[in-house]
Length: 402
Image (cartoon, rainbow, N blue to C red; front, side, top):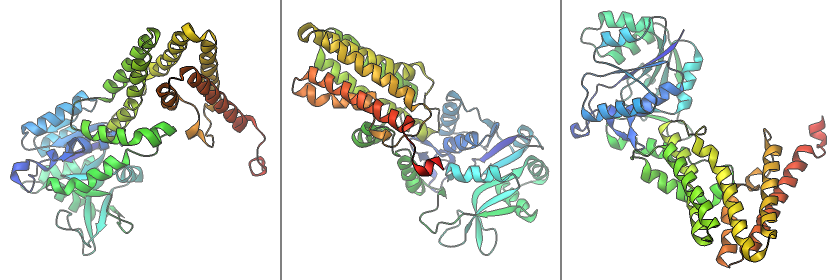
């Protein structure tokens, strides 16, 4: 039994000038794009969008989805929607304008049974359809294709999502209650752009969790956050940012080799936040983060080449010892990478890596102590390696031995 998704997208927003609920702006894209990606990430093999008319904003959103790897099926009638979904499919129904957290969608999908997500009938308005005296529909349900086919055959002028909900409840569907006792509900049904303010803030903040290295966590996080918000509505893709980071690092290699130390250093610094911004953008849009792109894979090697080029340039005045320092730093970094593979180490945030080492070099560059900076990088890489080695191969505690 496969999983299909049916997204209802035919209701107008409360303000006619804002178009459809489905095209209300959310995190630089639209509600319908978020819904389609949620469905695809939950395992839906086919995503069907039920619309009555396709205004320009909706057409643009569908085109973006198709260009980014999600190919929704557009159904203009209930009959077309039923034809696109097999009777044997499990059916994820997403109400018009609903914006939910991925956890809520997965909760329904993993339940494996006909189920409806509900919220208490307290402190909510008529955007949430009443089920009984104590609960309302939260906009998500897991049904089956057979119910859709039967409903489509007898729907006439009734609203599809309301009719499916009513039939599911009458058929004994399980009800999963979603409570907001500890704060705001992790979903909303939007009728106007203002309804999405809290949801957008939650989404944006949710992609800014603690990063793995100290430079990203303590230095670059504000920069990444600001630039991500600026790039949200743009057509810039994560792959473009990874390519830009690789380009900046490659330029630094040639600049260092040509004795343009400060210019090369600036390009190295400019490259450090770009992969973090790419990952944030990808998380916002629920896209792949480009982890398999050649540009992302090449960045560490280009950074190593930049360090080698810097040491070569410095060796013209300070002697070959600078190249020895760079070689030692790179050797310890390679050994550290081997030791860390598959292991979760205490203090891993502060171990040596390219972005932290780039920023660590800055005070030495400012004072003109480039050679001393190379020595500090070598010591940092060596210390990180020996720390990791001890954590991996050192004596285990009594608790671990038990």
